Length: 377
Picture (cartoon, rainbow, N blue to C red):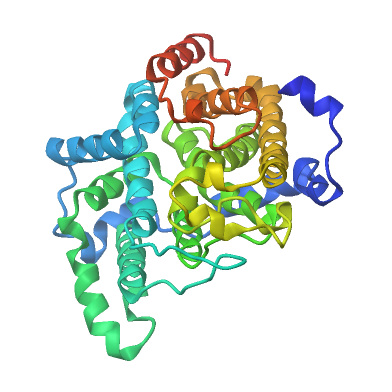
């Protein structure tokens, strides 16, 4: 991918993101980290924390590990290769991510016809789940104000829901991780906010929006992973920034086929002509419904996304030597992303190619093991 980056021209609309002012980026990430937050000792002395068990229960941690294993297999494998002292916090963060992602994934989707995808608002049930997690995060950080904000008719209900958060093992393990690793609150909130905004989205308008969403989700996960290893360096954050964007774009491509069947499109509108027949995606076999010209238009859009992802992952590769050796396992999730890009290129950027459905778990595990041993992805 690195050689390809030097040959292809980067679109002008992407240059602010691919050739961004690194000094400004460093300042932005560091400002998030040094923002106001409670001292760890103050958190434990908070009145809301008096009933907590300060020790991590084995069954709570096992619940989080099982949740990640069943819902995010690759993150589970990466977690097994994380430094031992970081695994508890790592699985707490990943379990939280699984829970937040499942809010939209667990919703009932509708098939959408017509010239383009319709937008539908998130249901009240989904919004309540998001608010529940927002209140839970607030309580983990010793802030009990979020449940009192909003519609007065629902304040009592939300307050009752918030008080139930300590019955959730993911919240309890996250609480432990926040105190053990001093996780930055703003990164967790960015993850929640991005997932919340995505509830109403059937298809993003621009590739810039896709890049921004990838940074707020996947890069935030990597920032937090670095913090579990006690790394808060600017150089490592830059690697996480680029790696997260690359992984986010790849994840959008990996889920494209499934999302299309759900009435969603992970390819932004500005990469596909407005007259594209989206309704053909709602058929049982969209691959046979699309004409050769339509297939080509779709391939070009996928090719553009592959290039963007490859550019960011190449940038992360070039900078990975700046990451402390003990923290490099944080970037093991990059390995499956690179592997999928390789498969997609071999499939000539056809997202309907059946070879992309193959799991290749042994191959991916081998590549992860090699990266873990060498410290280079």
